[in-house]
Length: 411
Image (cartoon, rainbow, N blue to C red):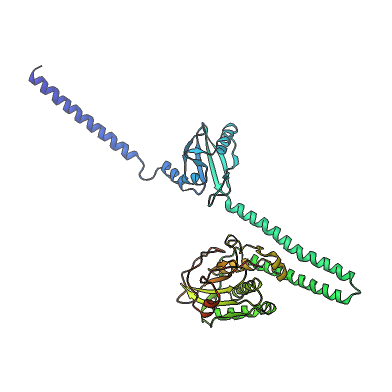
Protein backbone atom coordinates (compact mmCIF):
# COMPACT_ATOMS: atom_id res chain seq x y z
CA UNK A 1 0.00 0.00 0.00
CA UNK A 2 1.32 3.40 -0.98
CA UNK A 3 2.00 6.23 1.44
CA UNK A 4 -1.01 8.12 0.10
CA UNK A 5 -3.31 5.22 0.81
CA UNK A 6 -2.04 4.95 4.38
CA UNK A 7 -2.60 8.65 4.90
CA UNK A 8 -6.12 8.45 3.54
CA UNK A 9 -6.95 5.48 5.80
CA UNK A 10 -5.58 7.23 8.89
CA UNK A 11 -7.59 10.38 8.21
CA UNK A 12 -10.73 8.30 7.70
CA UNK A 13 -10.23 6.48 11.00
CA UNK A 14 -9.69 9.76 12.85
CA UNK A 15 -12.83 11.23 11.36
CA UNK A 16 -14.83 8.12 12.22
CA UNK A 17 -13.55 8.20 15.82
CA UNK A 18 -14.41 11.86 16.14
CA UNK A 19 -17.92 11.32 14.84
CA UNK A 20 -18.42 8.33 17.17
CA UNK A 21 -17.19 10.31 20.18
CA UNK A 22 -19.47 13.21 19.29
CA UNK A 23 -22.49 10.94 18.97
CA UNK A 24 -21.65 9.11 22.21
CA UNK A 25 -21.33 12.41 24.05
CA UNK A 26 -24.75 13.55 22.78
CA UNK A 27 -26.30 10.29 23.94
CA UNK A 28 -24.78 10.63 27.40
CA UNK A 29 -25.95 14.23 27.71
CA UNK A 30 -29.48 13.23 26.78
CA UNK A 31 -29.47 10.39 29.33
CA UNK A 32 -28.17 12.75 31.99
CA UNK A 33 -30.87 15.26 31.14
CA UNK A 34 -33.53 12.59 31.51
CA UNK A 35 -32.32 11.54 34.97
CA UNK A 36 -34.35 13.06 37.86
CA UNK A 37 -32.56 15.72 39.83
CA UNK A 38 -32.25 15.02 43.58
CA UNK A 39 -33.41 12.06 45.66
CA UNK A 40 -35.05 9.15 43.83
CA UNK A 41 -38.08 7.25 45.09
CA UNK A 42 -35.89 4.21 45.77
CA UNK A 43 -33.47 6.31 47.78
CA UNK A 44 -36.32 7.90 49.72
CA UNK A 45 -37.80 4.49 50.57
CA UNK A 46 -34.39 3.27 51.72
CA UNK A 47 -34.03 6.28 54.02
CA UNK A 48 -37.53 5.68 55.36
CA UNK A 49 -36.76 2.07 56.18
CA UNK A 50 -33.47 2.90 57.86
CA UNK A 51 -35.00 5.69 59.97
CA UNK A 52 -38.00 3.65 61.13
CA UNK A 53 -38.40 3.19 64.88
CA UNK A 54 -39.52 -0.39 64.20
CA UNK A 55 -37.24 -3.17 63.06
CA UNK A 56 -37.83 -3.94 59.37
CA UNK A 57 -36.42 -6.86 57.37
CA UNK A 58 -37.33 -7.91 53.82
CA UNK A 59 -36.94 -11.62 53.04
CA UNK A 60 -36.81 -13.32 49.65
CA UNK A 61 -38.51 -16.58 48.68
CA UNK A 62 -35.70 -18.55 50.34
CA UNK A 63 -36.03 -16.73 53.68
CA UNK A 64 -32.78 -14.81 53.21
CA UNK A 65 -32.48 -11.18 54.29
CA UNK A 66 -32.55 -8.83 51.31
CA UNK A 67 -32.54 -5.58 53.26
CA UNK A 68 -32.91 -4.59 56.89
CA UNK A 69 -32.51 -1.47 59.00
CA UNK A 70 -30.28 -0.97 62.08
CA UNK A 71 -33.30 -1.19 64.39
CA UNK A 72 -33.90 -4.78 63.26
CA UNK A 73 -30.47 -5.71 64.57
CA UNK A 74 -31.06 -3.82 67.84
CA UNK A 75 -34.27 -5.75 68.46
CA UNK A 76 -32.62 -9.08 67.65
CA UNK A 77 -34.71 -9.63 64.52
CA UNK A 78 -31.58 -9.89 62.37
CA UNK A 79 -28.28 -11.24 63.61
CA UNK A 80 -25.22 -11.67 61.35
CA UNK A 81 -27.47 -11.10 58.31
CA UNK A 82 -29.66 -14.02 59.39
CA UNK A 83 -33.27 -13.48 60.37
CA UNK A 84 -34.70 -14.90 63.60
CA UNK A 85 -35.79 -18.52 63.00
CA UNK A 86 -39.27 -17.71 64.30
CA UNK A 87 -39.64 -14.96 61.70
CA UNK A 88 -38.31 -17.22 58.94
CA UNK A 89 -40.88 -19.90 59.80
CA UNK A 90 -43.67 -17.31 59.88
CA UNK A 91 -42.53 -15.98 56.49
CA UNK A 92 -42.92 -19.46 55.00
CA UNK A 93 -46.49 -19.57 56.22
CA UNK A 94 -47.20 -16.10 54.83
CA UNK A 95 -45.87 -17.09 51.40
CA UNK A 96 -48.22 -20.08 51.39
CA UNK A 97 -51.36 -18.31 52.62
CA UNK A 98 -50.70 -14.70 51.49
CA UNK A 99 -52.13 -13.61 54.86
CA UNK A 100 -50.28 -11.50 57.49
CA UNK A 101 -49.10 -13.36 60.60
CA UNK A 102 -48.36 -11.88 64.04
CA UNK A 103 -45.43 -13.37 65.90
CA UNK A 104 -43.73 -13.03 69.29
CA UNK A 105 -40.05 -12.19 68.76
CA UNK A 106 -39.18 -11.49 72.41
CA UNK A 107 -35.57 -12.38 73.31
CA UNK A 108 -35.26 -15.83 74.83
CA UNK A 109 -32.67 -14.55 77.32
CA UNK A 110 -32.88 -10.76 77.67
CA UNK A 111 -30.06 -9.08 79.58
CA UNK A 112 -29.52 -5.57 80.86
CA UNK A 113 -31.10 -2.95 78.61
CA UNK A 114 -32.10 -5.45 75.90
CA UNK A 115 -35.78 -5.30 74.88
CA UNK A 116 -37.91 -7.50 77.08
CA UNK A 117 -40.86 -7.88 74.71
CA UNK A 118 -40.72 -7.67 70.89
CA UNK A 119 -43.84 -8.27 68.80
CA UNK A 120 -43.72 -8.57 65.02
CA UNK A 121 -45.94 -8.93 61.98
CA UNK A 122 -44.98 -10.73 58.77
CA UNK A 123 -46.72 -9.44 55.63
CA UNK A 124 -46.55 -10.59 51.99
CA UNK A 125 -45.00 -8.29 49.35
CA UNK A 126 -45.65 -10.48 46.32
CA UNK A 127 -43.31 -12.47 44.06
CA UNK A 128 -42.22 -14.53 47.07
CA UNK A 129 -40.99 -11.55 49.11
CA UNK A 130 -42.14 -10.87 52.67
CA UNK A 131 -41.49 -8.10 55.18
CA UNK A 132 -41.10 -8.53 58.95
CA UNK A 133 -42.11 -5.46 60.99
CA UNK A 134 -41.03 -5.74 64.65
CA UNK A 135 -41.77 -3.30 67.49
CA UNK A 136 -40.42 -3.02 71.03
CA UNK A 137 -43.39 -3.45 73.37
CA UNK A 138 -41.32 -3.67 76.56
CA UNK A 139 -42.71 -0.47 78.05
CA UNK A 140 -46.32 -1.49 77.41
CA UNK A 141 -45.71 -4.91 78.94
CA UNK A 142 -44.00 -3.34 81.94
CA UNK A 143 -46.85 -0.89 82.48
CA UNK A 144 -49.40 -3.67 82.25
CA UNK A 145 -47.46 -5.73 84.79
CA UNK A 146 -47.24 -2.67 87.05
CA UNK A 147 -50.99 -2.12 86.71
CA UNK A 148 -51.74 -5.73 87.64
CA UNK A 149 -49.40 -5.56 90.62
CA UNK A 150 -50.96 -2.28 91.71
CA UNK A 151 -54.49 -3.67 91.56
CA UNK A 152 -53.41 -6.79 93.46
CA UNK A 153 -51.60 -4.73 96.10
CA UNK A 154 -54.49 -2.30 96.52
CA UNK A 155 -56.93 -5.18 96.89
CA UNK A 156 -54.73 -6.77 99.54
CA UNK A 157 -54.06 -3.55 101.42
CA UNK A 158 -57.75 -2.60 101.49
CA UNK A 159 -58.84 -6.09 102.47
CA UNK A 160 -56.56 -6.17 105.51
CA UNK A 161 -58.09 -3.29 107.53
CA UNK A 162 -61.63 -4.11 106.35
CA UNK A 163 -61.24 -7.72 107.47
CA UNK A 164 -59.71 -6.62 110.76
CA UNK A 165 -62.62 -4.27 111.47
CA UNK A 166 -65.13 -7.04 110.73
CA UNK A 167 -63.41 -9.40 113.16
CA UNK A 168 -63.11 -6.70 115.82
CA UNK A 169 -66.79 -5.81 115.43
CA UNK A 170 -67.67 -9.47 116.07
CA UNK A 171 -65.42 -9.39 119.12
CA UNK A 172 -67.25 -6.30 120.41
CA UNK A 173 -70.59 -8.03 120.01
CA UNK A 174 -69.29 -11.07 121.86
CA UNK A 175 -67.92 -8.94 124.71
CA UNK A 176 -70.95 -6.70 125.14
CA UNK A 177 -71.08 -7.45 128.87
CA UNK A 178 -67.39 -6.59 129.38
CA UNK A 179 -66.88 -2.77 129.21
CA UNK A 180 -63.09 -3.06 129.33
CA UNK A 181 -63.00 -5.47 126.39
CA UNK A 182 -65.43 -3.31 124.44
CA UNK A 183 -63.20 -0.26 124.95
CA UNK A 184 -60.12 -2.24 123.88
CA UNK A 185 -61.73 -3.64 120.75
CA UNK A 186 -63.31 -0.30 119.89
CA UNK A 187 -59.89 1.37 120.05
CA UNK A 188 -58.52 -1.19 117.63
CA UNK A 189 -61.45 -0.64 115.29
CA UNK A 190 -60.72 3.09 115.37
CA UNK A 191 -57.06 2.40 114.59
CA UNK A 192 -57.95 0.23 111.58
CA UNK A 193 -60.51 2.78 110.39
CA UNK A 194 -57.91 5.54 110.52
CA UNK A 195 -55.45 3.34 108.66
CA UNK A 196 -58.07 2.63 105.98
CA UNK A 197 -58.86 6.33 105.65
CA UNK A 198 -55.18 7.21 105.30
CA UNK A 199 -54.70 4.51 102.67
CA UNK A 200 -57.63 5.78 100.59
CA UNK A 201 -56.44 9.37 100.89
CA UNK A 202 -52.93 8.49 99.77
CA UNK A 203 -54.22 6.37 96.89
CA UNK A 204 -56.22 9.34 95.65
CA UNK A 205 -53.20 11.64 96.01
CA UNK A 206 -50.95 9.19 94.18
CA UNK A 207 -53.44 8.72 91.33
CA UNK A 208 -53.53 12.49 90.83
CA UNK A 209 -49.76 12.80 90.82
CA UNK A 210 -48.74 9.76 88.83
CA UNK A 211 -48.18 10.40 85.15
CA UNK A 212 -48.88 14.13 85.46
CA UNK A 213 -46.68 16.69 83.78
CA UNK A 214 -44.96 19.48 85.63
CA UNK A 215 -47.42 21.61 87.55
CA UNK A 216 -48.95 24.22 85.19
CA UNK A 217 -49.43 26.91 87.85
CA UNK A 218 -46.47 27.43 90.15
CA UNK A 219 -46.50 29.73 93.14
CA UNK A 220 -43.56 31.14 95.04
CA UNK A 221 -43.11 28.97 98.12
CA UNK A 222 -40.91 29.66 101.15
CA UNK A 223 -38.83 26.60 101.94
CA UNK A 224 -38.61 27.53 105.62
CA UNK A 225 -42.42 27.65 105.87
CA UNK A 226 -42.63 24.20 104.25
CA UNK A 227 -40.18 22.81 106.83
CA UNK A 228 -42.10 24.34 109.74
CA UNK A 229 -45.46 23.04 108.56
CA UNK A 230 -44.09 19.55 107.86
CA UNK A 231 -42.55 19.49 111.35
CA UNK A 232 -45.94 20.40 112.79
CA UNK A 233 -47.69 17.60 110.90
CA UNK A 234 -45.15 15.05 112.08
CA UNK A 235 -45.16 16.20 115.71
CA UNK A 236 -47.55 13.47 116.97
CA UNK A 237 -45.33 10.71 115.54
CA UNK A 238 -42.25 12.35 117.09
CA UNK A 239 -43.89 12.61 120.51
CA UNK A 240 -45.10 9.02 120.40
CA UNK A 241 -41.60 7.68 119.74
CA UNK A 242 -39.63 10.18 121.80
CA UNK A 243 -37.55 11.16 118.77
CA UNK A 244 -36.35 14.75 118.60
CA UNK A 245 -36.06 16.29 115.15
CA UNK A 246 -33.59 19.16 114.84
CA UNK A 247 -33.25 21.60 111.96
CA UNK A 248 -30.68 24.08 110.74
CA UNK A 249 -31.30 27.83 110.67
CA UNK A 250 -33.84 29.45 108.35
CA UNK A 251 -32.42 29.76 104.87
CA UNK A 252 -34.70 32.25 103.14
CA UNK A 253 -34.73 29.99 100.06
CA UNK A 254 -37.63 30.03 97.61
CA UNK A 255 -38.97 27.49 95.14
CA UNK A 256 -41.74 27.61 92.56
CA UNK A 257 -44.37 24.98 93.21
CA UNK A 258 -47.38 23.80 95.17
CA UNK A 259 -46.95 24.41 98.89
CA UNK A 260 -49.33 21.68 100.08
CA UNK A 261 -47.72 19.04 97.88
CA UNK A 262 -44.25 19.97 99.10
CA UNK A 263 -45.41 19.87 102.73
CA UNK A 264 -46.95 16.44 102.13
CA UNK A 265 -43.73 15.14 100.59
CA UNK A 266 -41.53 16.43 103.42
CA UNK A 267 -43.99 15.17 106.04
CA UNK A 268 -43.80 11.71 104.53
CA UNK A 269 -40.01 11.80 104.69
CA UNK A 270 -40.08 12.90 108.32
CA UNK A 271 -42.63 10.29 109.39
CA UNK A 272 -40.69 7.63 107.53
CA UNK A 273 -37.45 8.61 109.27
CA UNK A 274 -39.19 8.55 112.66
CA UNK A 275 -40.85 5.19 111.99
CA UNK A 276 -37.55 3.51 111.09
CA UNK A 277 -35.46 5.00 113.90
CA UNK A 278 -34.95 3.74 117.42
CA UNK A 279 -36.68 5.72 120.21
CA UNK A 280 -34.57 8.67 121.24
CA UNK A 281 -32.28 8.58 118.19
CA UNK A 282 -31.69 11.84 116.30
CA UNK A 283 -33.37 12.95 113.09
CA UNK A 284 -32.22 16.13 111.35
CA UNK A 285 -33.56 18.37 108.62
CA UNK A 286 -31.30 20.68 106.62
CA UNK A 287 -31.72 22.88 103.58
CA UNK A 288 -29.31 24.50 101.17
CA UNK A 289 -28.90 25.79 97.62
CA UNK A 290 -26.77 23.69 95.22
CA UNK A 291 -26.38 24.27 91.49
CA UNK A 292 -29.70 26.09 91.20
CA UNK A 293 -31.61 23.49 93.22
CA UNK A 294 -32.94 23.75 96.75
CA UNK A 295 -32.03 20.59 98.65
CA UNK A 296 -34.02 19.58 101.73
CA UNK A 297 -32.31 16.65 103.44
CA UNK A 298 -33.86 14.44 106.14
CA UNK A 299 -31.29 12.30 107.94
CA UNK A 300 -31.87 9.57 110.50
CA UNK A 301 -29.82 7.05 112.44
CA UNK A 302 -32.26 4.25 111.72
CA UNK A 303 -31.90 0.71 110.43
CA UNK A 304 -30.68 1.75 106.97
CA UNK A 305 -31.24 -0.03 103.67
CA UNK A 306 -29.19 -2.66 101.91
CA UNK A 307 -27.81 -1.60 98.53
CA UNK A 308 -29.78 -4.23 96.61
CA UNK A 309 -33.04 -2.84 98.01
CA UNK A 310 -32.32 0.84 97.46
CA UNK A 311 -33.71 0.79 93.91
CA UNK A 312 -37.09 -0.42 95.17
CA UNK A 313 -37.85 1.85 98.11
CA UNK A 314 -39.91 4.24 95.95
CA UNK A 315 -42.18 1.49 94.66
CA UNK A 316 -45.78 1.53 95.82
CA UNK A 317 -46.46 -0.74 98.80
CA UNK A 318 -42.82 -1.81 99.04
CA UNK A 319 -41.71 -2.35 102.63
CA UNK A 320 -38.40 -3.57 104.00
CA UNK A 321 -39.68 -4.35 107.49
CA UNK A 322 -43.34 -5.39 107.23
CA UNK A 323 -43.64 -6.06 110.95
CA UNK A 324 -42.60 -2.51 111.73
CA UNK A 325 -44.99 -1.20 109.08
CA UNK A 326 -47.91 -3.04 110.66
CA UNK A 327 -46.98 -1.66 114.06
CA UNK A 328 -46.83 1.94 112.84
CA UNK A 329 -49.85 1.67 110.54
CA UNK A 330 -47.95 2.63 107.40
CA UNK A 331 -49.56 2.37 103.98
CA UNK A 332 -46.48 1.80 101.81
CA UNK A 333 -47.31 4.80 99.58
CA UNK A 334 -45.40 7.63 101.26
CA UNK A 335 -42.18 7.42 99.26
CA UNK A 336 -44.07 6.88 96.00
CA UNK A 337 -45.89 10.15 96.68
CA UNK A 338 -42.58 11.89 97.44
CA UNK A 339 -41.15 10.62 94.15
CA UNK A 340 -44.04 11.97 92.09
CA UNK A 341 -44.21 15.29 93.93
CA UNK A 342 -40.52 15.86 93.18
CA UNK A 343 -40.91 14.88 89.53
CA UNK A 344 -43.97 17.09 89.03
CA UNK A 345 -41.91 20.02 90.33
CA UNK A 346 -39.11 19.27 87.86
CA UNK A 347 -36.91 17.84 90.59
CA UNK A 348 -35.97 14.48 92.07
CA UNK A 349 -35.49 12.63 95.33
CA UNK A 350 -32.08 11.14 96.07
CA UNK A 351 -31.04 8.30 98.29
CA UNK A 352 -28.09 7.52 100.49
CA UNK A 353 -28.25 4.74 103.04
CA UNK A 354 -26.12 2.21 104.84
CA UNK A 355 -27.45 -0.65 107.00
CA UNK A 356 -26.86 -0.01 110.68
CA UNK A 357 -25.81 3.60 110.03
CA UNK A 358 -28.93 5.37 108.83
CA UNK A 359 -30.37 7.07 105.80
CA UNK A 360 -30.78 10.49 104.25
CA UNK A 361 -33.54 11.59 101.91
CA UNK A 362 -32.72 14.61 99.76
CA UNK A 363 -35.63 16.35 98.07
CA UNK A 364 -34.25 18.51 95.22
CA UNK A 365 -36.52 21.20 93.76
CA UNK A 366 -35.48 23.92 91.26
CA UNK A 367 -34.86 27.18 93.09
CA UNK A 368 -37.00 30.22 92.36
CA UNK A 369 -35.29 33.40 91.16
CA UNK A 370 -31.98 34.20 89.43
CA UNK A 371 -30.39 30.94 90.64
CA UNK A 372 -33.09 28.74 89.12
CA UNK A 373 -31.85 26.33 86.41
CA UNK A 374 -33.32 26.03 82.94
CA UNK A 375 -36.59 24.05 82.84
CA UNK A 376 -36.16 20.31 82.51
CA UNK A 377 -38.10 17.12 83.03
CA UNK A 378 -36.54 14.92 85.67
CA UNK A 379 -36.79 11.13 85.53
CA UNK A 380 -39.49 10.10 87.92
CA UNK A 381 -38.19 8.42 91.02
CA UNK A 382 -34.54 8.68 90.05
CA UNK A 383 -32.24 7.10 92.62
CA UNK A 384 -28.84 8.58 91.93
CA UNK A 385 -25.36 8.05 93.19
CA UNK A 386 -24.56 10.02 96.32
CA UNK A 387 -22.85 13.36 95.92
CA UNK A 388 -19.71 13.23 97.99
CA UNK A 389 -19.84 16.56 99.77
CA UNK A 390 -20.73 17.59 103.29
CA UNK A 391 -23.97 19.47 104.06
CA UNK A 392 -23.22 23.05 104.99
CA UNK A 393 -24.68 23.11 108.51
CA UNK A 394 -23.66 21.96 111.94
CA UNK A 395 -26.59 19.65 112.52
CA UNK A 396 -25.84 17.58 109.44
CA UNK A 397 -22.14 17.45 110.18
CA UNK A 398 -22.87 16.07 113.61
CA UNK A 399 -25.55 13.52 112.85
CA UNK A 400 -25.49 12.54 109.15
CA UNK A 401 -23.23 10.59 106.84
CA UNK A 402 -21.14 12.71 104.51
CA UNK A 403 -23.36 12.07 101.50
CA UNK A 404 -26.66 13.93 101.38
CA UNK A 405 -28.58 11.59 99.08
CA UNK A 406 -30.74 9.00 100.68
CA UNK A 407 -33.92 7.07 101.13
CA UNK A 408 -35.56 4.75 103.59
CA UNK A 409 -37.85 1.82 103.16
CA UNK A 410 -41.22 3.38 103.51
CA UNK A 411 -43.98 2.32 105.77
